[in-house]
Amino acid sequence: MASAASSIDHLRARAAFDAYVAPYDTANPRIALKVEHTLRVAELSERIAREAGFTPAGIDLAWLCGLLHDIGRFEQLRRWDTFSDAASTSHAALGVEVLFGTRGNAGAGDPGAGTGNAGAHTSDGADADDRDDAGASANDDASTGISDCSSAGIIHRFIDPNDELESIVYAAVAYHSDFRLPNNLDVRTRAICDVVRDADKIDILRVTCCDSVETVLAVSEDELLASTVSPAVEDAFFEHRTVRRDERATPADFLVSLACFSYELVYPASLGIAEEQGFMFLPFERPFGIGNTFTDPATRMLMSRMDGHLRAWVEEQDR
Image (cartoon, rainbow, N blue to C red):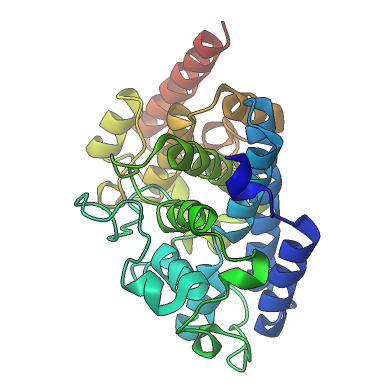
């Protein structure tokens, strides 16, 4: 991977990112939220890759892909005033368009083309940002939005032309929120994609600590505590897999889907970081900082059982 990543300049890439997001009004709390999330995912990707034993070049590449993974979010918010893919378009596909322009739309260089689930970017994983956030509208006068670079894309603001490197970045952005990665990715590409997906999951867990239930789920505390867990979501939890979007029907389902992230963290370092940060059990302990319990006794008992089950599973992984 050294030849692909050797030209990555952190200062250049960060400056390009800052220049790209500046016209979107970083005073907007939703834009600021996404900038902060992006920078944390880049740092987490770098750390996971380092602890997993990647080469220095591979670590740089993981950092870059973390930096670019959510670049479609800014244009999504500007165009549709939402972070909900269901209410707008796939933010991953939009990120590919931002970076690679029309050749991204055509699937040029798509490492997963022809797999059946490549190119769909359905974001079936439990994405904490797949909802309408509270706050001011995005800046509709963003002057460096996608419309200014739709034919060529902006990838070469971040790196020099490099087909191998661009192919990996393409995959990391395109598939970061898909329920499953395409089966035909090469070893290097899959490794980077897994790092970015792990980092994204770890940071999304923060929402149960740092944001309010009104902001994240657009429901009140009472509505959350009155909700129940859907059977399909309960099954997913005890099957140790992430929850598909079409399986989630209630606010409680969202909490369980967050907890399920832990099951599919690929790298041991990722699970260690999630434990270290202390967010992984919050969906059951104090979701969104709420100290009250669920009103339905069966739901309360199920949540307690899930909490114990997840803790036992984590302890088993640590042995």
